[in-house]
Image (tube, rainbow, N blue to C red; front, side):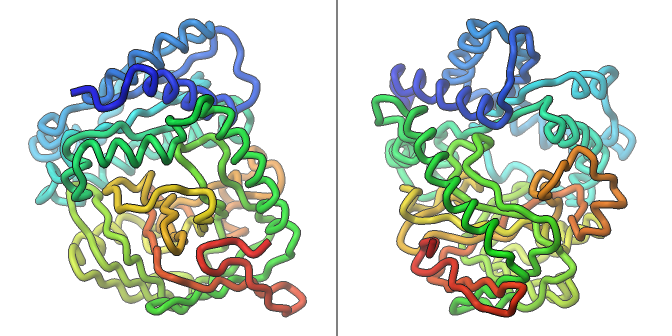
Length: 400
């Protein structure tokens, strides 16, 4: 069943290509672009592929494994198979210029019951490929974006009809606009003002408070805020990668999430000296604890983000982190990501950062990156290096 019209698919494809090219200005003819797609997203994938060809790029198309194939992989393999990397994969990523991913899952729960250690082994084994892409991106040689295509499974888990789910995507991505890419360019421009304001404040640390939260987050040296960069469609968040060592207090994720086949709700993390020392959840607690034991960095934070409700039209739980981390609604949202940091939030040439430099600056390193979202009414203050307190986020909006 095609839930988006042909015109909406054309517009969605245009927005994705805008996103990829905005994320990495300077694409040129014959650049290699990896296009990955779940089976249900093929109607969009075919149009994106056609447009990439017409632009003179060399698209490499890959259909992602079905839920059965993915479950078989984790349940039937031994450790060596899970760590297997096919010949030429490293060289392929070392020469890749772009990546577009169309997320259209047929199942969100097919990996339920699979030992998380098995999933972690595969993630750790493939981490070096992500590191290659990060280095190429820092050098201006690689750009990526991703989106979600509406499926029956997503709608079911979000407790919406497929039509209602598709309507959320249409309004969130501005597919009902005459020129969605132009609308995104406008949002991109407006977000620059917020980033410029935040980057000029000389922030020492943040104080985040709500009904269930009382958290201190150290910004760290040589940091900058990024966001609305084309990387995600949709994306309204303004984020940075703080110094993980300066995280203290309680964080609470009131929005549910699906990950690795598991439904998780009400995650509460208590941090001390930068690490989550107490981990609990109303549902899925055992899974959360196992994921946060994947490696040394999995219980430390890699990202701090805020979304202004004036930008985002997303007002429902979508059972999809891409949309949920950009929730607008009544109170906007903030989220933490446990795990890997984003080196491009370094205020300087991230391409020149060594692993030792990253460690010294407090950029977290991990094989995982998991966004945990809070949509409660909250107050976020920045304590500046001169000790002055400034309210930067209140009632779901930046106070710039």
